[in-house]
Length: 394
Image (tube, rainbow, N blue to C red; front, side):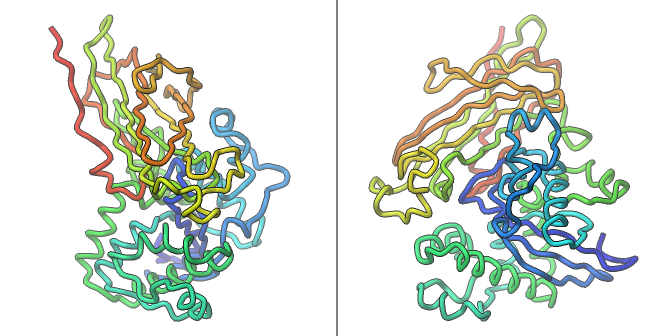
């Protein structure tokens, strides 16, 4: 995959955690990553908006289409509404090739948090491209480091640059300089590997190969981002977030996710999945934040309020039995994906508001220690996933 037998081209998706998608964030910035004999180069850069609308809509697995709608195969911005990265990546590959005519050998995904880990090793990078004057005029930093790249890319750029094309250009320039630093061997190798390993463990680095034999190897590891198959542990739960605001408000949402193991019933395990979300945006977010950040009410969500579709997956063959909001039962949408039960609820949060949603899963046949994977957000994953709580059973 590193180009030992000839150059390889991969579509690089930079997922923007400020607008949540199940596998991380909206894939706003795109580029072609070329590897030849292990040498790394960043080629053509683009954005999801430039790819346009797929007509006709690309076919996607019917189960996933039922849960996540036909948008999966219509917009590059929405290919990762599904948490199943192989599905998202294969769809993105086709979209890219239809739009550009350029074949790619696979898809690699990272997010700005991974960029911060890389920069902690390489040191700061300087922005020096054609958009430098606009960057300076907006008051954005021209030197990005491990400490400022996340707030700059996920918050400040929207507050200080109102034009989406200039925002995309800034993202592209940052990506170019980071990969220039990588390809030139800047930084200390051990620290770089540590940072990339951390990003991979947090689900922020995902890889898919269009080569079936290579993908069969990748599928054995969490790096694949798959919701089924050998990389998924027997009693794995999943909690994923999709923005319903059409905005960049997820920068302000703080979450915790916790499994609560209840006493077995009729010989089956039972587990509650507890998701607490808090909107930390300023009280006057509707007026103090740019319309591009709040969404301006474009999708029917009032400015300052954040709407999120919370998607919970249980282990294979289990049932999703109920959902509660602040302890009160609420309706939810039940589905099946890859023989796993799925529950979906929509949640709105006003500034400073906090809510706890719980899904109860029953008929769990696995008697192994449960674990949970979550959408990687701006927060450190270790702060999001809390230790499992175990009931005292007689």
